[in-house]
Image 1 (cartoon, one colour):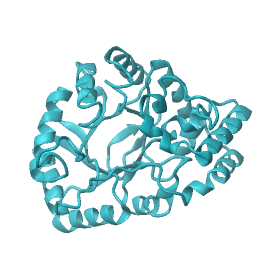
Image 2: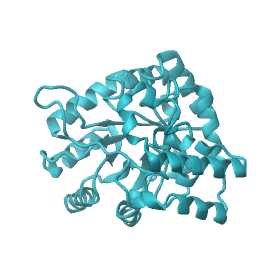
Image 3: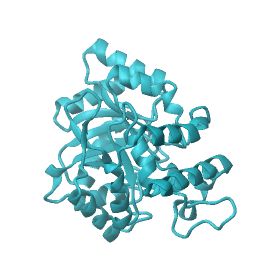
Image 4: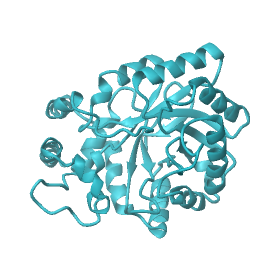
Length: 324
C-alpha cells in the first residue's frame, strides 16, 4: 500500500480508502465485517463513514469491526445532513454537531474521531459558529483533524480565511464527487486545494459503478447493482456516462487492467488527491480494486484518459449533497 499526507497535515492515509456507505444496506453485517478485514489486511488505513449511512448502521458495524484494532485506522465520519424531521436535526450548528459527535462516538465504540467532516455547507449557521465548535472538539481531544464535504469553492475559501483570522483549526481535507465522469472540481476546487494545502478525498470515484462498464443503455440493470438497489441512481445512467464507461473498458482491456482499477489509478495520480474512497459490497470486489494502487500510468495512457473524459470537466457535477 502507498500512503500520502492528507493535505498539508502530518496525517498519512492510504492511497485507497474504504467507503462504507453500503454497510448495513447493500452489504449485510457479516459481509461488511469481511470487507473490513480485507481492507485492513491489505494496508488500507483510511475508513470513511457518516452518521446517516444506512440510518446509523454503518457506524455501528464499523465500531464492532474495529474492536481491538482501533489504533490501526484513520477513522473519518461526518455530520450535517438531515437526521430527522424536528428542529436542530440537521446542519452544522454547535447544538447539532455536539449532539451528533457524541452519538457517533458511541456507535463507533471509540473516544475520538481522526477526521470529523462537515457533510455539507450550512447556509443557516454562521461559519464561525461551526468552526469554533470544531476547534473546541479538537481541543477537547475528541477530534484530531477536521474536514469539509460538498462545499463550493467560495465556501471553503471563506472557512479557511475565518480559521486563519481567528486562530482556529482549519479544514485539512475536502470530500467531493470527482472521477473521469466528473472532472468539474478541476475548474476551481483543485487549484484552490493545491494553493491552500487541502487534501481532496474523491467520492463516487467510479461514478457509482458506471466506470466499471457494468451498465448499458439497452441491457437490463445488473442484479444487486447500485441502480438495482436504488432506482434513483438511474438518473446518472445516460449516453455520456455509459459511453465513457465503455471507452474506459476498452482502454483497460488493451493494457491488461480492469476498468475499475484503471479509473481509480487515474484519480490517484491527480494533483491534490490524498486518498480515494472506494466502496464495496463484497470482499473480492475490494481486493480487485486494490490493483489500482500498483498501476503506474504512462504518459500516453494518461493523455488518452484525459481526452475521452474531457467533456466531464464542463458538465454538471455528477453528484452533490446540499441542505434544503
